[in-house]
Image (cartoon, rainbow, N blue to C red; front, top):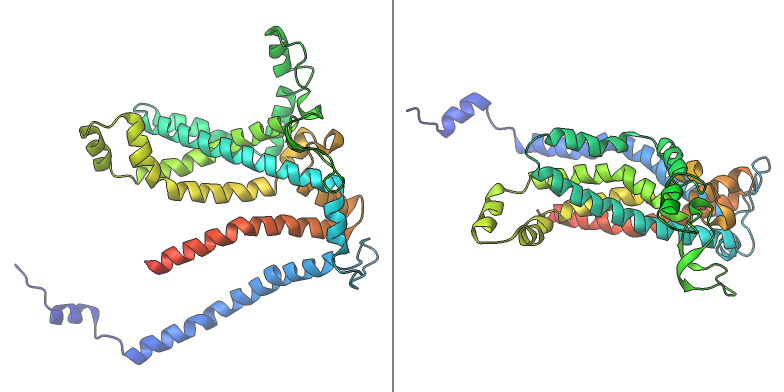
Length: 332
């Protein structure tokens, strides 16, 4: 048996590199990253700063650029939050985001657990559930617009089941589960618009496959020894799922939540394909508001301010997630 010694390793790999040479290589690393950092500083943070300046400026029409600061400072944001349409947009964004995330994540988790237990045809079921993710939101929106058409689609089934007045779905102006009614400051009903339900279902149906794929990857990393040990100890399927599987799927849940959140906050094409702003702005979202402000109303300052509000709401979730991930990596 051959004995491996330090002399043998040194003969094969060569003499160790001097410490000064290794230090010089590490000192050169920041210079290699400098071009990409400069590009990011200009085209990301520089443009964010410029957009913030526009939101405080008097620039309204695209053909009449005016970068002078509006007086009083922040009047555009005050005007924005007092507008009934933007208040409806914020309500719709919160309702859509919560409903979409719950259905997509829980549905993806349940689907992943069921597919993982399939013995024959697992690849077929995985492909079938993942197929909607390959579609565009426009295609999904057109299909679900027909399904939830007030005069056809699902309402025909509801009528045959004895429902006398089925909902108008995307054309319905009713808001249920109202928590707060119109007042002087808040000019809308804070609740769940009926018209948003089809849009939530359409978005969750399309992204449920993506959530399932994330959870399948997490399930594959769970050691089978732990599952067998839980079975030997007499744990039921529900107890194994609750105490063994779900705790180890928490990183997949967090990642899936963050990835789906930015899709929910910037939703645009699905809503346009299904209903647009809707009657009384019951299906309007900030993406449509920004587009209309930039093109129809020609208010660059207000459109930019609305976009930055959505950006700030996104940062409230993304920044803590990135900070937590950085601390975890640093702790390792």
